Image 1 (spheres, rainbow, N blue to C red):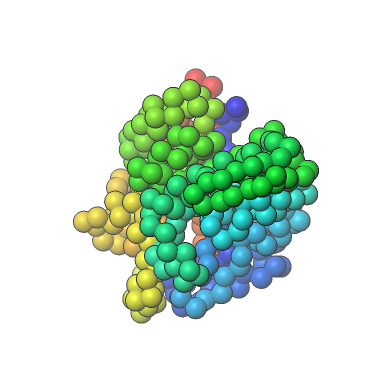
Image 2: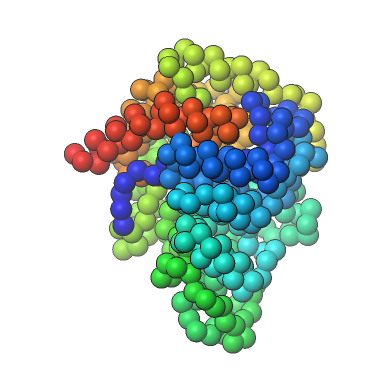
Length: 365
């Protein structure tokens, strides 16, 4: 498997704007806008595009608009020609036989550009509002069975399966995906069930950005658990990016971004149970405030506004940080940036060429 660095962007299915944790997005996630972001990301030089899954807004107020991930992925595929589209999906709401056919259709229509991010959870209450009340560990067990079933449907002529969560009786899914075995599987999560599932099924393991040393330890631990599978796995780090010409400019922007958050909206989200409790976010938020930093270019306080941490700094310093991640085994960088349309252009012009050169230098060493 290629170890060339992959730079990934994000489709804002919550809508888009300059600020996070305000009541409503400046730009709603309609078909035209999402297609524009996808086109822009491709033109800017990004290699892939993550399409997130949630059943209510995870970025703005609890009643803000939200685009469904499968429909958004179809829009992104139709608007682009080269970029890989990573569709996030939560098992449990769609039968795996139906989903296998949906994913195959998107894969073949895109010319083999589909990948899947299997998501087991989200903010508390998001799945429960639709009647899914499985506990954390059970969601991982269901997700693992789901992946086994869809991969069998993608490789076998007929599938019989009787499991705890799903049943197939002579099930068929035709045609097969363009890639033998089906689209690549991306998985995330820092809990023990998440790591176990990733060791058995992930093609790509995704982590929220933390220190290089911390990421290196996680890669080593998962690689050991995955055994022989580890040689074919790739590792991804993800964070929001605040990149400017100097560190001071970038920090000033991050500070303004935090200051624009609407405390009433944050309180409202907490009141209806929409505050993430992922293991990664709990670690970032532990004994920290919105002003906390893990290092000169790692703002952990971002986790008090949204999922994960943030990269903050000059183009040069962040490119060096990416190179350091590459040295410990990272080859995919999932980047978020507000607003997503303008930041795709900005980072494609100012940051990606520098980062690619620095990471390539590490890979060539």
